Amino acid sequence: MTVSGAFTLTGSETRLDPVIRNDPFPFYRAMRAQDPVYYDPGLDVYLVTRHADAVQVLRDDVNFSLEHGYQDRFANGHVEEFAAILDAHGGGFIRDLAVDPPRHTRLRRLTEKAFTAHRVKGFTERMRAIVIDLITPLGERGHGDGMADIGAPLTAQIICEQLGLDFAEVGTERLARWTTAVIAQIGRMQTREEMIANAHVICDLQNAIIKQIDARRAAPREDMISDLIHAKIDGEEGQVLSYEEAIATVRAFLIAGNDTTAAAIANLLFVLATREGLVEELYPQIDDERVMNRFVDELVRLHPPVHGLFRTAMRDVEVGGTVIPAMAQVCIMYASANHDDAVFAAPEAFDMSRSNLGANLTFGAGIHRCIGIALARSEIKIAAQEIVRHLTQIRLAIPREELTYLPTLATQTLTRLPLTFRLRGA
Ligand code: HEM
Image (cartoon, rainbow, N blue to C red; front, top):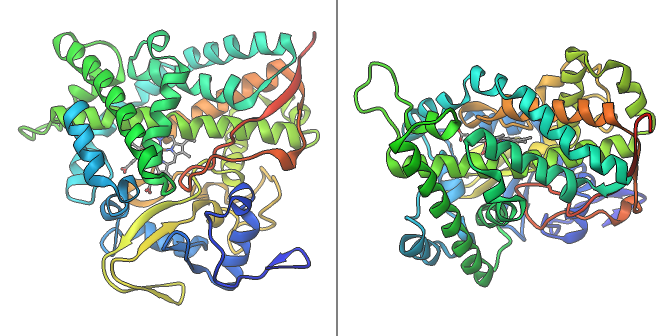
């Protein structure tokens, strides 16, 4: 399989392979060069690996259905049993924004109302305070885990406070359990036993959301859940979210806004720990918004938290010279597209001066492009500013080869990231 460091595809390689999972980029490079729309026999999915081809699929929501892409293999083949558990114990089996137009168009217009500039901007200083409160005691201690001690609790607290959930009541661990259970339904690697356990965890999540929605229906508050349940499209009668849609949207925001951003913060710490001199190069520039925005763009290009998400081909469609047969599953490999040297010169280099930083596909493209992008980018930027302002000598505490990732194709999440560092000026 491996010839002098290069990867020669035989057609039997699969993204499920734990070796590939922990270091997928050589596999992506090989696919882009040798078989850009590669049929993965382990997943039974066509992996679309080149940037131009990924954009073609993302922008073609007629030939490529996201709704089918998520639903056809939802719960990894146990969808009826999964739905029965949710119906009996968790308020129902409810879909979120993972639907096709025209249903998506209406839902998207309503849910976007929770992401007003006012809501995101008004939270900036609160986010900064949360980051500082978290990293100061860790800095004094001198070591910590970039995922368990920083990425996960930081994003958990931020998304809970944004939505209006009581973080002290929810807690990082419960939110992590909820997140893992939901992500597992699209991650394609869960067994039936895991599905049953996860379905009960999702019931707990939905019941907690129902409690919050009911409280706000009685008395609105200044938070995103209130924005969602009171959102309406002006001038269009009856255009509000149904009770079920509100539950599904809060669930989507809570999960999509948690795991992905936690992975991004862990990746931020990984980059700061492994790119020699980067922390001190950034330090004098951390309050320069232009520089920090470029830093965030290059960080998420090089290390996207989401590696691949699914669509179903609704008819035979040619992509990159390969005909994808009707009803076949397709995975858009954002991470591979971000490393395509047809678009990004020297793609493995960390280069904040690229002229086309914004061409990364980290947040998707087309009608399903991430709805939380402004919040996510602002969260990563504030974390970067405060980590660099307060910490120095950030180093990996274990050999790089020992880092591993969670077993899911959707997100590429570090299982742990042991670090040492010092409080600046201490
Ligand atoms: C670094 C953090 C994040 C990354 C990398 C990320 C990535 C993505 C990607 C790639 C998509 C497109 C899905 C597709 O095409 O199938 C997406 C959609 C979505 N994201 Fe994010 N996301 C992040 C943060 C957030 C946050 C903070 C929220 C909410 C608070 C959020 C909510 C959503 C929702 C609801 C969708 C579905 C949109 C639709 O279908 O119209 N995401 N995200």
